[in-house]
Amino acid sequence: MSYKLSGGKQANKNKVIWILALMLIILIKVVTINPLWVERYYSTGFYVFFSNILRILFGWISFSLGDILYLIAGCWVVWKMVKNLILLFRRKINKKSALEKLLKLILLFAFIYIVFYIFWGINYDRKGIAWQLQITPQQYDTTDLLTLQDLLLQKVNATKMTVVKNEEKYPSTKELIKRAKRSYAEAQKKFPFLKYNHVSVKSSMYGTLGDYLDFTGYYNPFTGEAQINTTVPKMLLPYVATHEIGHQLGYAKENEANFVGYLAAVNSPDTLFHYSTYLDLFLYTNREVYYFDSVSSKKALKQLTLPVQADLMELRKFDLDHQSVFEPLITWIYGNYLKLNNQPKGLHSYNAVVGMLIAYYKKYGKI
Image (cartoon, rainbow, N blue to C red):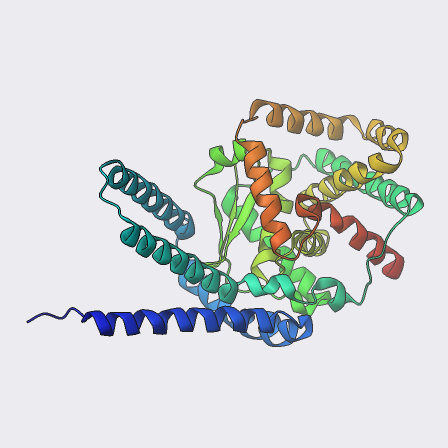
């Protein structure tokens, strides 16, 4: 007995699959037209429920399941490419089979697109943290930037002094994750929408690779896991952890994850989290100042205390030691990915947190 579908039935089945895929893609596009719909019904509705389920399912596993899935997917892609190149070389691919393979590839991309956006990607079109805090980031001037730079300079120097004075040591990855969770528990008292349950933050399996491709962490929307690159200089990790948890909470845009990570970290009782965050935000702001007033930017760097400058030297050395010919390509790809997902500034979107900090300071009078 054969269970294979006849040609007509298979063709009908394929049509149904294509129609369903197209309808889902159209539905996603329709939903994302209205950021308020996304905020109310997806980001603070469906996504909260669904992301918690993912973290419950996979958070208890000690290793990153998402990293393994990426590895399997990468091996499958390489195997398919080699297989088809061999078939092409042997002239066993004709126009009909080539068309069939192309249609299957398009359908696969459509499936990945649908899963990605339903699982997490629709968050790119939400109203976001600025709307929740009722702040309005606007075009800032040099005065605003210099004020923010000075505030962050003071914070960086003061928090580093505390770290040195108390002889604080950077914790293990396991302890770091616990402290990041505690940061959000404290932030939730002021900002209930930052409630974070069911921890699923893990060390990346691709840390060394990430050093050369210039990534410190990433979120896997298919498993709900946040990965941190634990091979980078330790002073970066506290802020990286709160940033990636921000992604888990549905703040997809990089400037929003930066800002949410900041809100969590500064509400932590842990000075290491304060220093890590203020240092990163100072560097973002200092780079922005440089575009308008390079003299003031360089002057601020010289006003950093010697222990802070030692950390910056460590960061520079790390970057120099891990330069790669592939980094510009990865940067270009990721920058265009951000542009396609409602972040027209590309990689410069990370720096957009500066505008949010200025707006927050103007409303609340503190950083």
